[in-house]
Image (cartoon, rainbow, N blue to C red; front, top):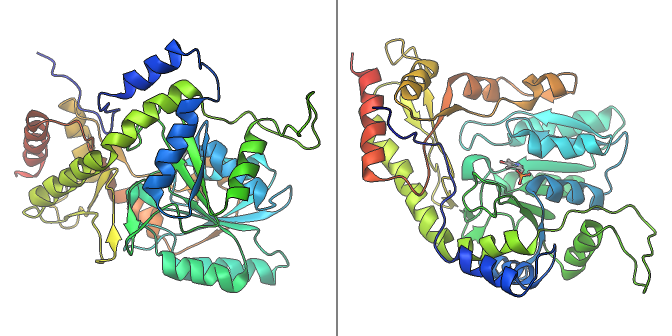
Amino acid sequence: MIKDKIWLSSPHMGGTERNYVTEAFDTNWVAPLGPNVTGFENDLEVYQGENTHVAALSSGTAAIHLALIQAGVGPGDEVICQSFTFCGTTNPVQYLGATPILVDSEYDTWNMCPNALKQAVEDRIAKGKKPKAILAVHLYGMPYKIDEIHAFAKTKQIPVIEDSAEALGSTYKGRKCGTFGDYGILSFNGNKIITTSGGGAMVCPTKEMKDKTIFLATQARDDAPHYQHSEVGYNYRLSNISAGIGRGQIEVLDKHIDLRRKMNHFYQDIFEHIDGVTVQKEKANHIFSNHWLSAILVDPAKTGGVTREDLRLALEADHIESRPLWKPMHLQPLCKDFPYYGSNVCETLFENGLCLPSGSNLTDQDRNRIKNSILKVFKK
Ligand SMILES: *Cc1c(COP(=O)(O)O)cnc(C)c1O
């Protein structure tokens, strides 16, 4: 008998989403605006904390695009980007005809290395071009070294775009990720910690920036009775149907974070007794990860030759999805000609890392299957 597939991370509805969507139908608010959009933005503002202003958008990628535009990025400019990330981080830089300057990670958080960042920025300035923005990412929900990176960005007066697409609910020194940068980005794609089926948001420090973001996201329409336009705009607003799903999802967000964190502990318990495998976890008390995805590093020199690929294939044979870590962007054909500053950290992580099933909807039965499948590989 073929068992049901266990997925890496699948949508997990809380139950009330359908009510918001039904209400949208009943009131005929089937449009990229309406009460659910406003309601979802309010919910996110309450969740993110004091003095946050949230604009709901069609995707996290769209949010990064609009952040780069507001940071003044244009053709020929350079933007510093964490190399170890999903292409949704770097693609918008290329939409604008700008060049991503790719930077390595460090081992604590797997995110942008403050030393490599410093080296990159100073070298670009020495070469005659000051980067227009820094795009740093909280990968898999793990907060990057915010104090170090933001303090450095401030000394150079370079705005920081905080890609918090994977880190909704993660905190740093008690404050929510997505609220530290000059621009904060969230994603509600299908596999993220909460989903609107597809969607994103920009977390803005001021009301003016939120208004500007919504203006750009609705074709930059000027205030006039007819359609009047003085600058290029985009069709990037979230629909009222999608926002309805988001309103229901927000109600269960903290519960789902708790369940994802339990998955991380589940893997810590398993691998505690297996040599050569480490689970990525918080390395300091002031860091709280939503553990969107739980990930491990496999060191074949210490596992008796078992590689992450051996483990991935064994899980796949048991109908369990796992996935190598993000392939660094500087190794992607798309970005191979862009400058890269680093010392082989994210390359090593990519080589040896694996994301394991992390969904908040996994059952005890699923966990047993995962555990047995893992133990089979290492029981030699
Ligand atoms: C998902 C993701 C994005 C893009 O978000 P979408 O909503 O899918 O466009 C950007 N950056 C990172 C790190 C992501 O994981």
